[in-house]
Amino acid sequence: MLRVKPIENRDYELIQKAEKVIEDNYRYGRHHIGSAVRTTSGNIFSAVHVEANVGRITVCGEAMAIGKSISEGEHEFDTIVAVAHPHPHESIEKCWVVSPCGMCRELISDYGKDTDVIISYNGQLVKCNVMELLPEKYTSDTE
Image 1 (tube, rainbow, N blue to C red):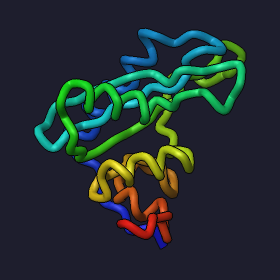
Image 2 (tube, one colour):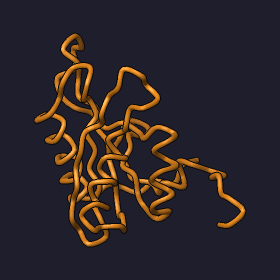
Image 3 (cartoon, one colour):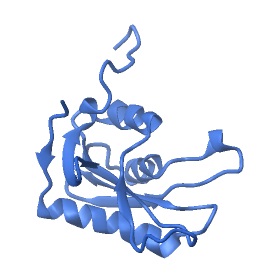
Image 4 (cartoon, one colour):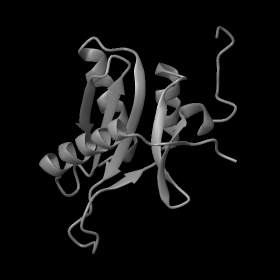
């Protein structure tokens, strides 16, 4: 059973930042996921995912937001979220929160085991620690 926490007002701001970055930059076949990360200092960094024709080299929105944060000198993370933008052929009208993929779960946990992730769970938005989403995380012998 996943241990979850209710989201707070400041988490809605994080979701809105993720929605804004993808709404401003959505391009069919190029960018359809937006992400935002809040650092422990309270700053928010948002970014879109970068799609590639060869799927293996696509860079997820969470990785882009974390990279943007780190590039600006912020290395400690509080909460992260990703949202999907509807495609033109879909009957969905607005963005929705999506869970991080497996590689993003690894990346988020590599850079902050205490980082919370906003997800949709049992029909509602909640937060959980990234390690809840990645049981038995891979570690090297040096960790």
